Length: 416
Ligand code: PA5
Image 1 (cartoon, rainbow, N blue to C red):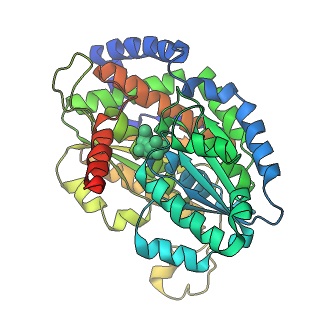
Image 2 (image 1 turned 180 degrees about the vertical axis):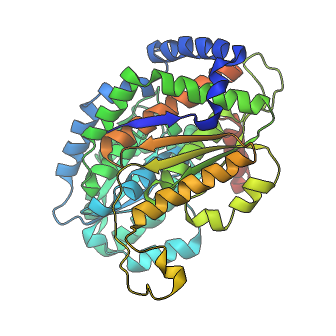
């Protein structure tokens, strides 16, 4: 069980003075972030209260609830998608994440939906984001048309700020099932609150290992988070403005999407903490191996040298032997006695080596597998790494003024 970060050919980096000094600073930030009461995500791994709250909410749902529609966006949706994608093989109930206001998608969902066996989980930390609020209005009205208002309300779970916002007020006035998002946990850091825990538990995912993995990473994973933060900082200084995540595993595709949001909103900043214009941040990209080897690798290997590469490989994966059915053809012969797992690892290693041949920076996270503890550890590690990188860059990793401004303009346009 666990995660190893291999520096491959870049191990010499650690010897450099710049690396050592930054690592020393980053270690200090690790402790500072854990102790700051205004930063809530670091306290979540030890907190089982939310698991109990989610359990109570599940018990209040009408019997026969089979499908959960999660209506949220950004940090209120991507963590759930990550968990459902990672554990889809063991889910016993369906969770559908609706994070866009595309009429054709919504119409399709409404056509397929059976309100008698469905539940709406509207999630918004602020309680005022227009996308989930509009989706909630549409889905709720659809429920009311089929079930009546009282029964429709029994099938709503509201996840929002503990005390503020329109959704909190609505939940209290209508006595709805509701779950809290703590005030000191920002949207993109909230997957281990009821934002991600409730939908995961509805699907039948055991969330306790996630918390245990995160807790273990907090205790033992400091050097990994520090190393990742220093690398991101150094690559940005060198003008490597693109960070490519390369998981060799379909089940980590949405982990990549979750991380890209965390990384983009936390570190992409116009100004630093002193108010100076810095235009910081790298652009994240997710490429899934092996699929994207055949679509993006050419550019990565031979195009602009402005990227750093982080691979994710699995030590243990579901292994399917490749049967020797067509061995009489030379192209099939090489597959004799091999398995998909072996093929996947050979392809990953081949890709890493070919990038290294062009002197590109390649790192490898080796995961024992995709189990709850490993994913929990990955979540905590990347949250911490992102926060530390922000501190090294002297930008605030916990605000998102750019997103907020867009929300305000959109609201104004709607008023016209
Ligand atoms: O990370 C963030 O803060 C954002 O991505 C938010 O999660 C997103 O804008 C949705 O906000 P809210 O949960 O308030 O609806």
